[in-house]
Image (tube, rainbow, N blue to C red; front, side):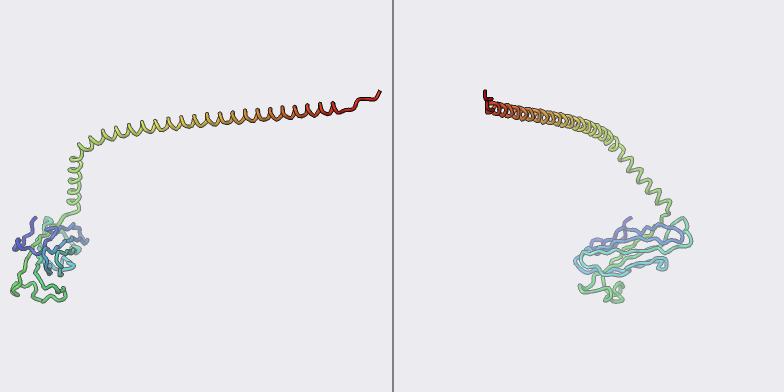
Length: 234
């Protein structure tokens, strides 16, 4: 839906979205946000009007945008006591905009700022209102999800094959890592046993050498003692 904008070639502001859509539920408020952007290098004032001011709460309904600046206007639909016929809404919104002086503030705007008889150039953008029931909104969401699922089916099939290949590769790498860990454990245990045997054999050799040395020294001492013993007198 394209908003009707006067003098599009010199459009002062842009509006998104271009229609007001409310989720309509009895005795519940609903809101819609409008983003208004200044497309010029001048200050632009805006004002929002509606054909049903008692049904809607608009904030801000008037403002001044600096060059290339933007703001968000929140339009709130007040809680309603009954459904409109066929969920059709005839309410309309009008957003007016005009160029103002560089130092202008919203409180400084003259009363006739948005009056055509004032001689100002005023642009107008008409916005229609659309009501959506919760069931309709859910159906639209489900349809979008179905379309996305259909578009992604082929990609999902291809990704399934890739996932299987990746899973197989991960399993092979895991098994190789387990085998390598077991081999390292076996080598470590073998090294420990060799070291233990080496330590035991070294201790035995040292012990035998000490015993042999002590034996030799005892033998020498025994011989010396025997040779130094005096012979008996005849």
